Image (cartoon, rainbow, N blue to C red; front, side, top):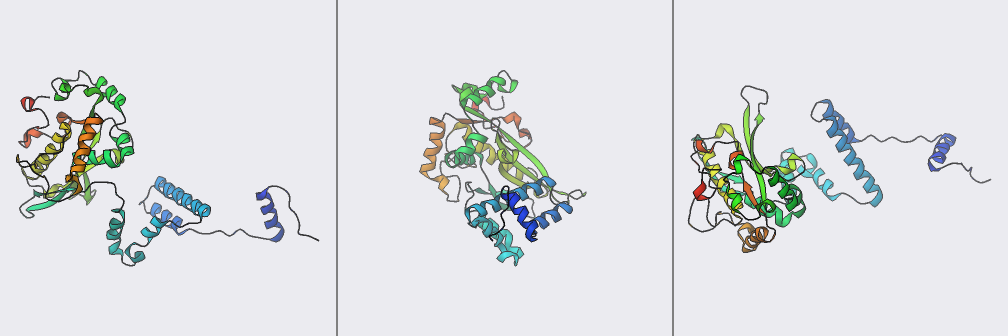
Length: 328
């Protein structure tokens, strides 16, 4: 007599076999699930984050079942710090691994003065004109989504703000076809607590970023990082002044649509960074020129949209044409 046959679909047949032969379905307990629940219980993770991570883990599991392959990236992350044995090395190992596929240009390095106790310190700044050019050349999809979706969107924007007092004498109006060419951008600075949150002695870090006013996407993607500054280390009349001079210089050449011809602190023509990077190459210079000449895009920096008083620093709004400085 042959084996007993069960009727129904696959699931029904399995259930009948389990009932007939006393099979019990084995339940596995995920270490990740336990960790997620623990983080939720301690208030470290929100329920939405727990669900998102669990869903991603399940998607990975199903992919492995289908393709029968390992995740090289996940395996690499799990191995940092000698698989967690040397916890102090985890941060270093993650940065070393992640830097291999980060699609960003190298930062611009310059010394900035701080309080007397600290003096001049070498700082890393993500210059807007470099980020703009690099994203156009290396991240076209992100550039289109976050910075310039297309000329029609630009025209809709400029038409909607036409007649605004800030644009009455703005130099962008002197550029032919600006409504389908100029990309309006905004600059943002905000303080975030880094140490002693909720305490009277809280320490703040001011984050500076910029974004296109016609881009779309999550704020965390659209706001492009420039620089972070510890407030308590600021030297009055020196730290912010130096930073904003560098920033205004970068925005000036972004507005002009040309690669900087001189350093931020000198009128003498020459390379503007003593750090040798590919950004100083002729190839990228041509790419930046092509960006503005063939794609017909150039960036506009609204001086009056700055949440910062230029007059308090003595910095001239050099983004405007010389004969119109101070008039927007």
